[in-house]
Image 1: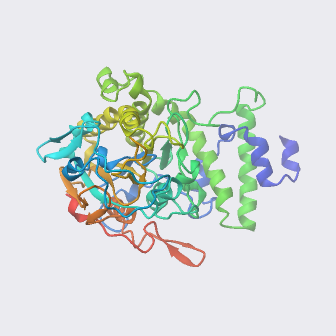
Image 2: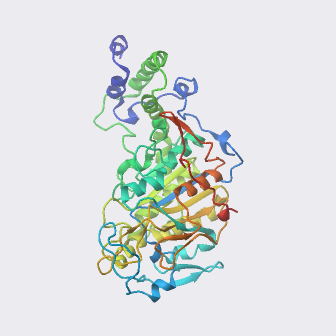
Image 3: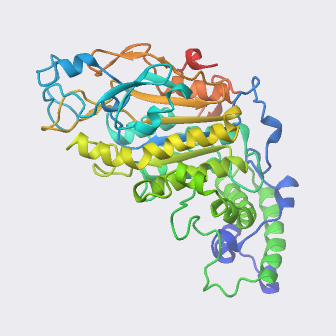
Length: 480
């Protein structure tokens, strides 16, 4: 190691040589606390901001459930008697073509509909467990997207823009509020156990924000849940002594680097990630170890059933992460591609039954568990998707993409349960009353976190950028 001290190894190269994975380098807390990292990198727990930065917050932490592929509103939450009545007729939409085909006849849902709860919310039988929670949920019944293509649609619902390069909501929340703990990230992403969603990692990017605010991917059901947290077994040369010597050297190199240049977001984010990795080596195993959870809790999330085990474990892990100080957790259902997710082109009955069956019990279990643990008092739960489906058939039994209307719902702190905002038209084709976009949803979420969406900005390329761009209104009708 003394030889390394005397040599003139570039700082970036040293990080790669010495690292052996994130777990190979464990920066001391003093590095961040002594002001050796560039401004804007969240290295400390920001417990001082629990009350919000612009007004008093009702929400301290968030779980977002994202249904990747375009969940069909007219087969789940948007009950339309006229669609049922006119099923089989040619709708006078005027459409010559849809995204991937031509519009067929109007097609009713293959699922039965019933009213549930004291609020009388209509839910199809594809969601029997969520149906039992409707009095705790606030539905946005007339959401719309500016795109009906998966990639742009997923970007829009996450970042407010249909093109890549912009920060997602989780990154904005991390940037604004930081983490509630020094031992875990502020923003964690839990993808579907079968693979990444449309846009891959682009959907949870920090965009032009400092890289430290991008989502940290955790895969609770994978053999290695967190990539590169520990050095590989083959790296026998990494010892406690070598780490200590390396930290001392890296600290000196870091001082020299910052004396010469400032504001390198990528490099400082890498340094911050090494520091966080050291802490996560101790904290992450406990978070991911669910052996202490009761049998009743495991059944509540569906861990005792093969169909629901994976998504249920992801939802349970999300709750455990929030309990331990993570600010924003995004849980994905569905991967890229037209099979096995919410993208029901071929046979909406069979395809929706499969993916809804993997998530319904788990999402409802999360609602019930958050309530039972008193976490509804400061936690917001969001269920959403990138767009909806057409009320017309595609082929004989499928449905094509529809950016005209879809449904999202919210539950938890600051939310008025049992209400609905907005309406689609008589067929569930287009939003017709109180149409809302991602901007309005994002503005509402930030408002609950104590953030004015018009004041949360970041200077980029000469413009003060916002999550909500130049749009967005807080949806006060769904707030308690």
